[in-house]
Length: 248
Ligand code: ZN
Image 1 (cartoon, rainbow, N blue to C red):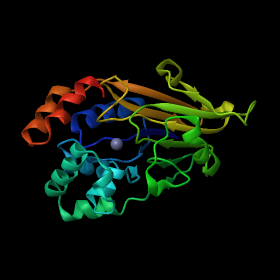
Image 2: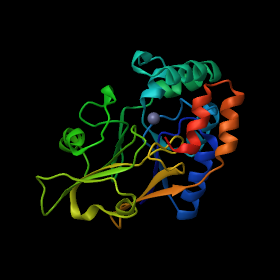
Image 3: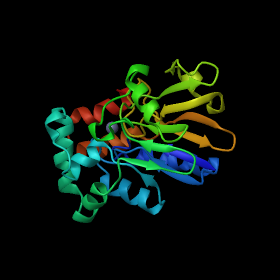
Image 4: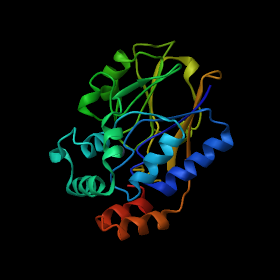
């Protein structure tokens, strides 16, 4: 099965469309999202509609939960909070209900997906190191799992030859092709479609071929100016438009 795994779209329609074009070129059979469909960007309804149309398996991110009223925004920074308020006013009740009904974790045939962690998914903690990731690696129901939330691609592998150590990889070159057959457990952060924060402004996504037991983290350029203009026209905070071209 060829999975296309994407997340942290954050209402960025141009980036989502560019990633889905890549999925179609690569022959992706199943679209899966690690959450945060909305928040920050200015096209929430369009992004929700596309995922539903593609029959994507989607889990709930913290911004999705906040927009659905299921998470207090006190922990959000002021710009994120403004984006939650704007999104709530921009989407309909039916879309709010769809966001609210998303599961925290989804189990597929060959992998599991969540937003932050697997041991306490409701806390939306960040996995930025092996220390952060170890409880998730212990709790994982499948050998290969995918998360998002940090907007930074990452792979944590427990290799067959050395299962007590968690091998950590942030290097983009090493993430280009990940051999998950060599690992007992693999926890992979697919990066962000709509708001990358690793100084690379291109949209990030992952391909997972369960037959080949390989994962590829890929990047694709998209029309940032168009999306930034949409954010400004919506009256969202200027910084949310500016940061897209910086990849922060
Ligand atoms: Zn996010």
